[in-house]
Structure formats: structure tokens, C-alpha cells
Length: 313
Image (cartoon, rainbow, N blue to C red):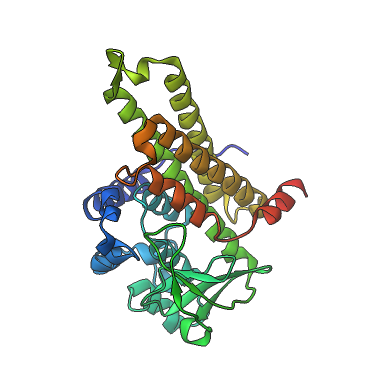
């Protein structure tokens, strides 16, 4: 099957708009300030997210959406990954697809109701103010009212820019879960791309022995490998998004996208830290934020065993 992955005019316009918007309101350096943790920066501009129509992007017009599809949603998720947007924004993008009650779906699209993700161990990410929780189980994904879930005390975690709340979840339906898998892959791909750009830019400006470190073969090869991993993840993710629901095996394509995107995000984030040398391991450098966020995002959706099973079936 031959698929043209080149963005069309509408997709390019959507991507340009969301990239410019996020660059303005969600610079990565915001996370250095504790006041912007727990999705606070995103909450401050929530009305602007809603005005852009992001949360109804992939829903039909009959459902109150813009009538676009998963590829357009993937472009938004990828941009969120590049800027380490709160997972709650991605959850809000996914939740309307799980809503079975029209009033709930409309409230999620408008932003009046808020959503958050639950991870595999039963914790809610950045769940403060969330009305609905996207819960993953063996059968797929489901949308649960936050008031129906047993919540324990808020806790910290690996990614100090986010909060976690313990819940008990249940299984759901498979097709929306595969859609979410692709969007998580797109977010991870954004991390892979951002860390590549960050490493390349640093390699151009940091000098050792009278020349930029990018002139040294080890750094050149590392950056080239980062670019290759990011490109492979992006290609598979956009392919999975484009052919979703078109008669191909969505489970295989989604699993392939998640697998490639995870590897690209993890490996590129680590390589970016190493490219920055000793500074890359410090809290003053943003490099560590990408690795921590990649590790947290990988806990969403299916586990590695389920993805391996889909790929080897």
C-alpha cells in the first residue's frame, strides 16, 4: 500500500498554528519554575486551547468536531511532545473519542469538562481539576468519571513537574485505545525531534580545542543517529495515523509506532544529555526533562508485552 505522508495544505496550516502557539505559551524553560508544574501553564491558557478547536479536531461535524482525522491530531500531539505539554492536554484530545454520552462529549470538546490520563499502575497524571479520567485496561481504554474513582493522596514521582493520584480502573474498548496509542507515539516522536534539535544546536555552539564539538566524529555520528531514529519514529507514526481505520491491521501499526517512538524518545533524550556533557546532567539544563517525560509517557496505554504480542502475532 502506497501512502503519501506529505502534509496537505490544511495539515500544514494546523501544524504551523499549533507550533507557533505552543512556542509562545509553553516554552520548555517554563518547567524550571515550580509554579508551572502540574499543568499550571496549560491551565492558564486553557481557553486558548479551546478557541483553537483542538479538542474536537478528530471528531465528525455531527459529533460537534471539526471533521478532521487522526493525522491532524497526531500533528498536535507531536507538537505537544516537543514542548513537553502536560499529558492532561493530550488526554483532553483523546477523551471525547471515548465519551458515550453526547453531553459529556460536548463538554470535553468545549473544555468545560477536563480530562486526565491514568497510567498502568493506577495513578492519574496532572489530575487536579479533572472531571474525567482516561483509564487503560486489558480490553482497551475507557472514560471514567473522576468522582466514581477511589483517589488516594497526591504524590510526587520521577517527573517532578507532574503530580500523581492513585486510582482503581477498569478495562475498556479497543479501537479508541489504538487511536490513543498512535497519539502517545506522536508525543514521544516530538520528544525525539526536540532532543535532536537541542543536541545539534549545542554541538554547533559549544567549542572544545578551538572548534565546535559538532566537528568531532563521535558527536557527528551521535547526532546523525538521533535524526535517523526521530525520522523513523515520525514516519511510522504518521503512517499509522494515516491508515487508521482504512482496513489495515491498526493494532500492528499502532504497536510499531509506539515501539519506534519509545526507542527514539528514550535513546535521543539520553544522547542529548551526553552531548551536553557534564552540564547535561544538571537541573539547570533542560535535557533531563525530556528523558523524565518520555519515561512517564511510556507508562500510558498498552504495556511492552502487549505491543510485542501484536507485532509477532
